[in-house]
Length: 497
Image (cartoon, rainbow, N blue to C red; front, top):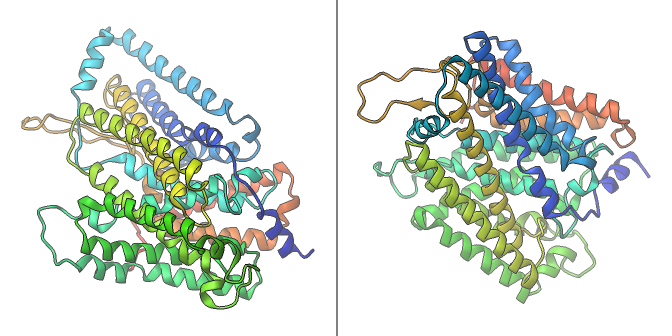
């Protein structure tokens, strides 16, 4: 077999992993975020000032926010269940060190600290969990697209062939979810009245980079005979085209229907699509082609997975718009956000129940078709992931109350109560890797795709040893992070649309 066919076979005919293992991996990123924040508070407590060094800040962010995820999806994957436990114990140790030192400096009853925390007001114009969620979806996707080509990345984490729940199957849907959370329709102020189809016109202009990137990927893959998994999207289709069309179609639907009813549109789309798959021959067409022999003649037949899965991805997008609208409601206190987190977690649990029913009576999860079970799974898991970041942020807010003058970037800022004449105190923080990636999200994803291609052309990834794999993955992610970090320090945003 040629190298191209070997690599294609390496990522084909896989079945994914269990929902339990995926759930075990959910708290990893929030725990990394919490660990980084606690270390910064501890530094401030011992030094009497926040960390402001840029090189130290970058190394700390990369070492704590990114590196543990690289290890967890490669050499530590056999003992994945231990990693969250170890991180939790480490975070607990740092927290109790901070608390013990605070009590030495001046004893304050724990109940009083809790009361102060519950009455704390937060900056209502900044929701860090949204930013962190979107950045981590991008980071985890960037890690996976290269790591999947190495043998140290478990095959069960890769995309499932037809049915199954792989980590990368979730990543595709989570990318759609994260885009919808901050789409123009969600961010538009309720008081501002705009023409109905103004957002559609803006999206027509905004999606051109995605179309260009999709065409660029198509031409480059075909010209150098780069390995590709045809059953993911088809012969000519790719994720850039999917994201562009989903955004455009969603803007059209949101112009036609009230955006606060987008969940109804999402449910209708997902259920009707699933019924069509089950009642008609559409499912057979997606899986086996028009004549049942898996031929790829004609544009629709050649790209059937990419084109027909649009209905499922559109349902995820519309549901995520509803979530985004809920999140952007004005909340300015810890109590408000604790209530919101409880409601979101309850919604996730209800969706997991519906997922169980859907898998038992309709169809198992299938990213290839983006069926009803897949939509339910993606939304439920994304809500759980998001709530984990909210909880991590609230723990950091509590910890910052223990150390005066402490600052954590990409974390909620405590502010004075509404109506208070006291001036809010700005936090002096170091330039943050999360903020840097957030400023240039599309560039970060593009860099990851280009570097993945370069590595695969230059290196025989399938037969790489663990030490080489870890070196390559760390260097690859550090270069991506370093480039966007440098751009952020110079306040450069590469966006021309």
